[in-house]
Amino acid sequence: MKKQNVIVDKSFNFSLNIIALYKRLQTEKEYIVSKQLLRSGTSIGANISEATAGCTKRDFIYKLTLSHKEAFESRYWLELLNKSDLTDINVDKLLNEVNELIKILTRILITARKNV
Image (cartoon, rainbow, N blue to C red):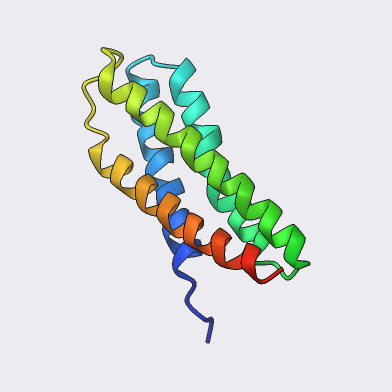
């Protein structure tokens, strides 16, 4: 039986939600911000997945640091969508999700850096 990993699961679900938002934004002909958000939002989980693939501690920290940065970038794009008139789509749920990912990644990175 596969061991549950909260950050892997949350980042994967966030990626799925970002893809769904991207599709909706495409139907509204919003191409620039949606593409940026798609890239940064799905990159979070991809880097977390790489980090958990059994590598050195330094590589683990490096990959999680990339995920952390991508989460901040995703939050930026979501806030931009929220405050602009590009769309009327409510992204509050996604903002909550990305803020939770940032908090979890921050805690993991603090612990990991102490243990190097």
